[in-house]
Image (cartoon, rainbow, N blue to C red; front, side, top):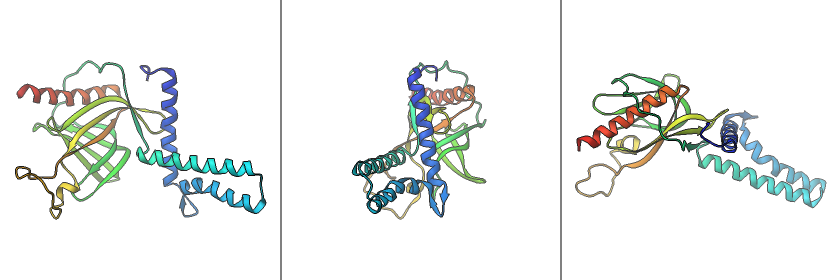
Length: 239
Protein backbone atom coordinates (compact mmCIF):
# COMPACT_ATOMS: atom_id res chain seq x y z
CA UNK A 1 0.00 0.00 0.00
CA UNK A 2 3.00 2.27 -0.46
CA UNK A 3 1.09 4.39 -3.00
CA UNK A 4 -1.32 5.45 -0.24
CA UNK A 5 -0.49 7.96 2.47
CA UNK A 6 0.36 6.55 5.93
CA UNK A 7 -2.94 7.86 7.27
CA UNK A 8 -4.96 6.13 4.53
CA UNK A 9 -3.01 2.92 5.09
CA UNK A 10 -3.85 3.00 8.80
CA UNK A 11 -7.50 3.77 8.14
CA UNK A 12 -7.75 1.02 5.52
CA UNK A 13 -6.21 -1.55 7.87
CA UNK A 14 -8.63 -0.53 10.62
CA UNK A 15 -11.56 -0.74 8.21
CA UNK A 16 -10.42 -4.18 7.08
CA UNK A 17 -10.44 -5.48 10.64
CA UNK A 18 -13.74 -3.74 11.40
CA UNK A 19 -15.48 -5.54 8.54
CA UNK A 20 -13.89 -8.84 9.52
CA UNK A 21 -15.00 -8.73 13.16
CA UNK A 22 -18.54 -7.53 12.40
CA UNK A 23 -18.90 -10.36 9.88
CA UNK A 24 -17.32 -12.89 12.27
CA UNK A 25 -19.74 -11.86 15.03
CA UNK A 26 -22.70 -12.70 12.78
CA UNK A 27 -21.39 -16.27 12.43
CA UNK A 28 -20.20 -16.92 16.00
CA UNK A 29 -22.92 -18.49 18.16
CA UNK A 30 -23.23 -17.77 21.88
CA UNK A 31 -25.97 -19.60 23.78
CA UNK A 32 -27.73 -20.38 20.53
CA UNK A 33 -27.71 -16.82 19.17
CA UNK A 34 -25.24 -14.94 16.94
CA UNK A 35 -22.70 -12.90 18.90
CA UNK A 36 -23.76 -9.83 16.89
CA UNK A 37 -27.22 -10.04 18.43
CA UNK A 38 -25.72 -10.06 21.93
CA UNK A 39 -23.54 -7.06 21.06
CA UNK A 40 -26.50 -5.10 19.72
CA UNK A 41 -28.72 -6.14 22.63
CA UNK A 42 -26.29 -5.42 25.46
CA UNK A 43 -27.00 -1.64 25.67
CA UNK A 44 -30.75 -2.35 25.68
CA UNK A 45 -30.29 -4.84 28.51
CA UNK A 46 -28.27 -2.29 30.47
CA UNK A 47 -31.02 0.27 29.87
CA UNK A 48 -33.51 -2.08 31.51
CA UNK A 49 -31.13 -2.44 34.44
CA UNK A 50 -30.96 1.37 34.60
CA UNK A 51 -34.68 1.62 35.30
CA UNK A 52 -34.47 -1.11 37.93
CA UNK A 53 -31.42 0.28 39.72
CA UNK A 54 -32.30 3.95 39.17
CA UNK A 55 -28.89 4.87 37.74
CA UNK A 56 -28.07 8.53 36.86
CA UNK A 57 -29.79 10.01 33.80
CA UNK A 58 -26.51 10.79 31.94
CA UNK A 59 -25.76 7.07 31.97
CA UNK A 60 -29.12 6.36 30.29
CA UNK A 61 -28.31 8.89 27.58
CA UNK A 62 -24.88 7.29 27.09
CA UNK A 63 -26.45 3.83 26.74
CA UNK A 64 -29.00 5.14 24.23
CA UNK A 65 -26.27 6.73 22.10
CA UNK A 66 -24.14 3.59 22.32
CA UNK A 67 -27.07 1.41 21.24
CA UNK A 68 -27.77 3.66 18.27
CA UNK A 69 -24.11 3.67 17.21
CA UNK A 70 -23.89 -0.13 17.37
CA UNK A 71 -27.02 -0.49 15.25
CA UNK A 72 -25.66 1.97 12.68
CA UNK A 73 -22.27 0.22 12.58
CA UNK A 74 -23.79 -3.17 11.87
CA UNK A 75 -26.22 -1.74 9.34
CA UNK A 76 -23.36 -0.03 7.48
CA UNK A 77 -21.24 -3.21 7.47
CA UNK A 78 -24.13 -5.31 6.16
CA UNK A 79 -24.98 -2.75 3.47
CA UNK A 80 -21.38 -2.89 2.25
CA UNK A 81 -21.41 -6.71 2.39
CA UNK A 82 -18.67 -6.51 5.05
CA UNK A 83 -15.99 -5.25 2.67
CA UNK A 84 -14.76 -2.17 0.87
CA UNK A 85 -12.53 -1.64 -2.15
CA UNK A 86 -10.04 1.20 -2.56
CA UNK A 87 -8.55 1.74 -6.01
CA UNK A 88 -4.80 2.20 -6.38
CA UNK A 89 -4.08 5.78 -7.52
CA UNK A 90 -0.82 4.67 -9.15
CA UNK A 91 -0.70 3.82 -12.90
CA UNK A 92 -1.37 0.14 -13.70
CA UNK A 93 1.65 -2.16 -14.00
CA UNK A 94 3.34 -2.67 -17.35
CA UNK A 95 1.42 -5.33 -19.32
CA UNK A 96 2.79 -8.85 -19.52
CA UNK A 97 1.89 -11.59 -22.02
CA UNK A 98 -1.62 -12.97 -21.39
CA UNK A 99 -1.99 -16.29 -19.65
CA UNK A 100 -2.06 -19.38 -21.89
CA UNK A 101 -5.59 -20.64 -22.58
CA UNK A 102 -6.98 -22.82 -19.77
CA UNK A 103 -4.06 -22.11 -17.42
CA UNK A 104 -5.56 -21.76 -13.96
CA UNK A 105 -4.54 -19.20 -11.36
CA UNK A 106 -5.41 -19.71 -7.70
CA UNK A 107 -6.81 -16.70 -5.84
CA UNK A 108 -9.43 -15.60 -3.31
CA UNK A 109 -12.80 -14.46 -4.63
CA UNK A 110 -15.24 -12.01 -3.07
CA UNK A 111 -18.70 -11.13 -4.32
CA UNK A 112 -21.82 -12.89 -5.59
CA UNK A 113 -21.34 -16.01 -7.69
CA UNK A 114 -23.93 -18.28 -9.26
CA UNK A 115 -25.17 -21.56 -10.56
CA UNK A 116 -28.26 -21.94 -12.72
CA UNK A 117 -30.44 -22.61 -9.68
CA UNK A 118 -28.76 -20.66 -6.87
CA UNK A 119 -26.25 -17.97 -6.01
CA UNK A 120 -24.44 -16.82 -2.91
CA UNK A 121 -22.14 -14.07 -1.69
CA UNK A 122 -18.70 -15.13 -0.46
CA UNK A 123 -15.81 -13.34 1.22
CA UNK A 124 -12.25 -14.35 0.34
CA UNK A 125 -13.28 -17.85 -0.74
CA UNK A 126 -10.70 -20.11 -2.46
CA UNK A 127 -11.11 -19.85 -6.22
CA UNK A 128 -9.51 -20.48 -9.60
CA UNK A 129 -9.50 -18.22 -12.65
CA UNK A 130 -8.82 -19.18 -16.26
CA UNK A 131 -9.41 -17.96 -19.80
CA UNK A 132 -10.72 -20.17 -22.61
CA UNK A 133 -10.01 -19.75 -26.35
CA UNK A 134 -13.64 -18.86 -27.13
CA UNK A 135 -13.16 -15.64 -25.16
CA UNK A 136 -14.78 -16.44 -21.82
CA UNK A 137 -13.13 -15.57 -18.51
CA UNK A 138 -14.19 -18.13 -15.89
CA UNK A 139 -13.98 -17.99 -12.12
CA UNK A 140 -14.76 -21.13 -10.08
CA UNK A 141 -15.32 -20.46 -6.38
CA UNK A 142 -15.32 -23.07 -3.62
CA UNK A 143 -18.31 -22.00 -1.51
CA UNK A 144 -17.88 -24.99 0.82
CA UNK A 145 -15.61 -28.03 0.35
CA UNK A 146 -16.43 -29.73 -2.96
CA UNK A 147 -19.29 -27.34 -3.71
CA UNK A 148 -18.62 -24.65 -6.29
CA UNK A 149 -20.09 -21.46 -7.69
CA UNK A 150 -19.11 -19.76 -10.93
CA UNK A 151 -19.09 -16.52 -12.83
CA UNK A 152 -18.43 -15.85 -16.51
CA UNK A 153 -17.60 -12.64 -18.34
CA UNK A 154 -16.02 -11.72 -21.65
CA UNK A 155 -14.82 -8.72 -23.63
CA UNK A 156 -18.40 -7.78 -24.56
CA UNK A 157 -19.68 -7.74 -20.97
CA UNK A 158 -16.67 -6.25 -19.12
CA UNK A 159 -17.34 -2.67 -18.05
CA UNK A 160 -14.41 -1.80 -15.77
CA UNK A 161 -11.32 -3.40 -14.23
CA UNK A 162 -9.51 -1.70 -11.33
CA UNK A 163 -6.45 -2.56 -9.26
CA UNK A 164 -6.49 -1.75 -5.56
CA UNK A 165 -7.03 -3.20 -2.10
CA UNK A 166 -9.95 -5.10 -0.64
CA UNK A 167 -10.62 -4.20 2.99
CA UNK A 168 -11.61 -7.39 4.79
CA UNK A 169 -9.57 -9.55 7.14
CA UNK A 170 -6.51 -8.94 9.28
CA UNK A 171 -5.12 -6.62 6.59
CA UNK A 172 -6.23 -5.29 3.17
CA UNK A 173 -5.64 -7.67 0.24
CA UNK A 174 -4.13 -6.64 -3.10
CA UNK A 175 -7.06 -7.14 -5.46
CA UNK A 176 -8.76 -6.64 -8.79
CA UNK A 177 -12.30 -5.24 -8.95
CA UNK A 178 -14.04 -6.45 -12.11
CA UNK A 179 -17.39 -4.94 -13.12
CA UNK A 180 -19.32 -6.64 -15.90
CA UNK A 181 -22.84 -6.98 -17.27
CA UNK A 182 -24.48 -9.99 -15.66
CA UNK A 183 -25.89 -12.45 -18.20
CA UNK A 184 -25.90 -15.72 -16.26
CA UNK A 185 -27.41 -16.99 -13.04
CA UNK A 186 -30.71 -18.08 -11.49
CA UNK A 187 -32.74 -15.16 -12.85
CA UNK A 188 -31.62 -15.98 -16.39
CA UNK A 189 -32.51 -19.66 -15.97
CA UNK A 190 -35.99 -19.03 -14.55
CA UNK A 191 -38.11 -19.74 -17.59
CA UNK A 192 -41.29 -19.36 -15.54
CA UNK A 193 -40.65 -15.63 -15.06
CA UNK A 194 -42.22 -13.25 -17.55
CA UNK A 195 -40.37 -10.10 -18.60
CA UNK A 196 -41.66 -7.14 -20.56
CA UNK A 197 -38.94 -6.64 -23.17
CA UNK A 198 -38.76 -5.33 -26.74
CA UNK A 199 -39.52 -7.85 -29.48
CA UNK A 200 -35.88 -8.12 -30.50
CA UNK A 201 -34.71 -8.82 -26.95
CA UNK A 202 -35.06 -12.47 -25.99
CA UNK A 203 -33.63 -12.38 -22.45
CA UNK A 204 -33.98 -10.15 -19.36
CA UNK A 205 -31.75 -7.08 -19.55
CA UNK A 206 -28.25 -7.52 -18.07
CA UNK A 207 -27.29 -5.59 -14.97
CA UNK A 208 -23.85 -4.71 -13.60
CA UNK A 209 -22.09 -6.85 -11.01
CA UNK A 210 -18.68 -6.39 -9.40
CA UNK A 211 -16.54 -9.24 -8.10
CA UNK A 212 -13.12 -9.09 -6.51
CA UNK A 213 -10.03 -11.24 -7.07
CA UNK A 214 -7.43 -11.10 -4.26
CA UNK A 215 -3.85 -12.27 -4.64
CA UNK A 216 -0.83 -13.01 -2.49
CA UNK A 217 1.56 -12.76 -5.44
CA UNK A 218 1.71 -9.50 -7.38
CA UNK A 219 2.80 -11.44 -10.46
CA UNK A 220 -0.48 -13.38 -10.49
CA UNK A 221 -2.46 -10.14 -10.22
CA UNK A 222 -0.53 -8.60 -13.12
CA UNK A 223 -0.98 -11.74 -15.25
CA UNK A 224 -4.75 -11.88 -14.70
CA UNK A 225 -5.12 -8.12 -15.18
CA UNK A 226 -3.13 -8.25 -18.43
CA UNK A 227 -5.16 -11.24 -19.69
CA UNK A 228 -8.45 -9.43 -19.11
CA UNK A 229 -7.16 -6.20 -20.66
CA UNK A 230 -5.76 -8.13 -23.64
CA UNK A 231 -9.15 -9.70 -24.38
CA UNK A 232 -10.83 -6.28 -24.23
CA UNK A 233 -8.26 -4.62 -26.50
CA UNK A 234 -8.43 -7.54 -28.95
CA UNK A 235 -12.20 -7.16 -29.11
CA UNK A 236 -11.93 -3.42 -29.77
CA UNK A 237 -9.30 -3.99 -32.48
CA UNK A 238 -11.58 -6.46 -34.27
CA UNK A 239 -14.46 -4.00 -34.54
